[in-house]
Structures are given as C-alpha cells and as structure tokens.
Amino acid sequence: MGQATFRLDDEVEEWIENRLVAGQAKSVWYRYAVESTIQVDPILDELYEKYQYEERQELIESAVRKEVDRRKRD
Image (cartoon, rainbow, N blue to C red; front, side, top):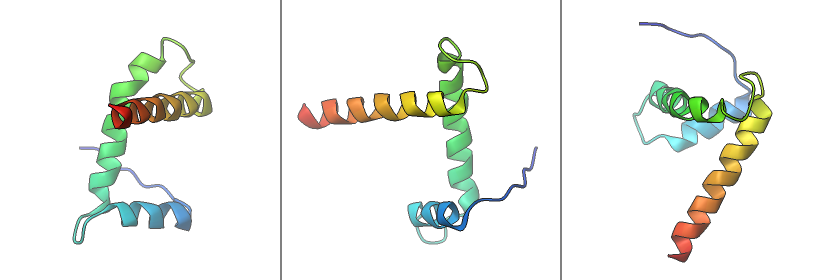
C-alpha cells in the first residue's frame, strides 16, 4: 500500500482538522479526497488535459453548487 508525504499550508491543515469528528484521523479525509478525485477525473478528461487542475476545480465547484441549489429548492 502506498504512503504519501507532502506539506500543506497551516490554513489548509486547520480546515481539514475542523472537518473531522473527535478522534478521527486526517487520513480518512485525505482518502475521501483522493477517492472522490479518482471518480471524477475520468469524466473531466473529456473536457480538459490532465494538468488543467484549476479548470477542473472550477467546473467541479460550479456543478456541485448548481446541484446543491437544485436540491435545496426541491
């Protein structure tokens, strides 16, 4: 099983910690983030090159916002 090491801004680290329930390891959130990306990236490959991270992120944010707004209306 792979194991990654990387640095994050303190602000990002704090945000992730605030998303967790007491006693939950940060690795749970990292795994969720990676698994979500693995599901979405093949779809985004239809529109963007693999290195176009900002464009991919903008589309994901826009699509999720639209869907959340739609579900709140329903």
